[in-house]
Image (tube, rainbow, N blue to C red; front, side):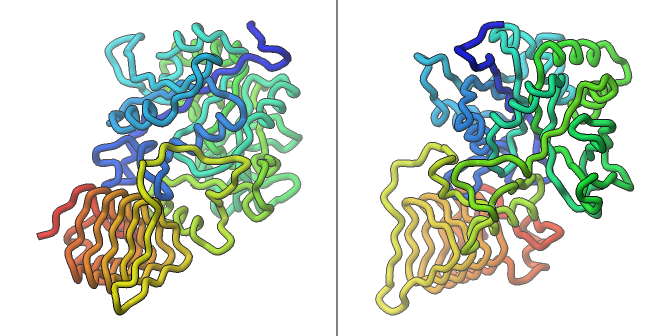
Length: 412
């Protein structure tokens, strides 16, 4: 294998092909990893930033469903120095093994073996594209190299009472995984914390030789569903080649103690909303302001945010994130996330509002616990998140009461 100095040759693959049905209507015309988050960011920016900050800047993004806006974002934002051999490139489903889409996450890797062969890495990161977290991947790779494992699986400590919702890892004698359990009714506890379980984060680092052998064996199996967590990892567990990496031990420069170990799967509207609320607390569980490990994105060329007294009423804004180009006039905004170029008019009241780019909120509107997608003009005195029956008749409303207004919606 080719090496660069004392550092092993590494390729990173970000899996960005999911449909994101549970995030509808935000995924009606965009892939889930392209969904905006936290104002100017997209979900995929978090995985890519972790890899780039860690020094792993040869990154392939595997796309499939509704990938246009994601491809545009990658091409405009993630332009690394090709002179230094760095790149972020999107690879659509190429159907190299036959006329079929990716059958699962393992099949997505198998159909793109040419990418791995071309780069000839010794190790391969495989990260999901739609989680909110900070992680130094170097520490995870260091453990893989030290253990000699075929794969290391990043895992989060979660209460046993909640772990049945996830893939659960049992590693009673150290880091070697003895079982990989899919949503078990009785999750195994940890040796050092019996009331907690290890749940998979969907992030992996592989020894490439072990990965290639496992992928070919999986492709030859008639019983496989072609899924990394469901098939490939359990097969490596059976061989004794799978180890767990405890995410709580990961140390990211610039993170405070209360922010360490933060990870959110924003696969539902409720989880997506809650992750935004984590951002705007006085002491946020996840901070966008860590300059030592920044989250990168491409900002629009817009003037600073502006807060305007309308001649009578001064704006009142608390515990909120307000992006460039936004103008807030004589309104009240609490625990909200305002994306670029948003307008909020006088006497409007926002509480728990997540407003995407170019949204306009008319005079006297009341917006509570709602996500409003791009280019929506909300007429004066409209109420959203006030009357559940009215909301359900017009919009998607989550189990937790989050109202989602689709992109470009026109009020009548």
